Image 1 (cartoon, one colour):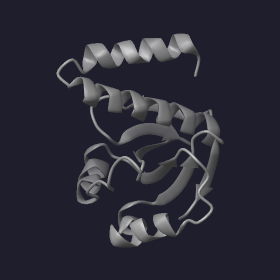
Image 2 (image 1 turned 180 degrees about the vertical axis):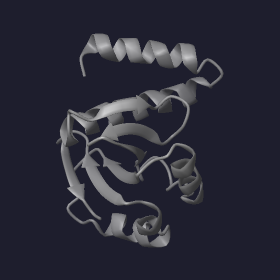
Image 3 (image 1 turned 90 degrees about the horizontal axis):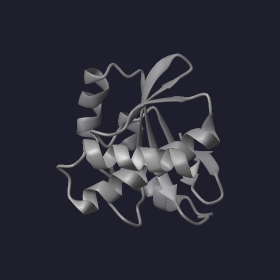
Image 4 (image 1 turned 120 degrees about the vertical axis):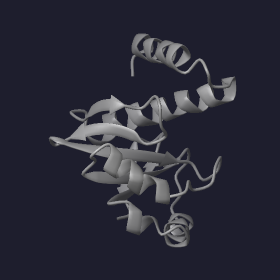
Length: 142
C-alpha cells in the first residue's frame, strides 16, 4: 500500500471512528493494514467494500460478497464465532474466511489446528488460512 493511500485511510479511521479509544483506533489501523496486504497477496482484483464498523471485513471476490476475519493469536484470543453467522446473514455474505495472521514463519501449524478444533472454526468459516505478513505467504488450512 502506498504511503499516501495509507495516510488517507488512517485519516478516514480517525474521522469515522472518533468514538473509539486510541487503542481501538490502533487496532482498526492494524486490521486495515492486514486486510490490504492480504488482498494484495491473495488476489489484487478483490475489492474492499467495508472494514470500518466491524471486525469482519467485507470484500467482493469473484463477483460475490465475502467476509474476512483476521486473528493474531500472539495478541488476542479467537473471537466468538457465533456472532459471525449472524453477520453473514445480515450482510448477505456467500462465504466467511478466517485468517490467522503471523509475523514470523511458523512451520508447525498445530497451534492453528488446535485453535480450529477448540473453537469449531471449521463449522463457522468456509475457508481458513494462515497469513505470514512479512513473507507475504498465505497457506490454506481449510
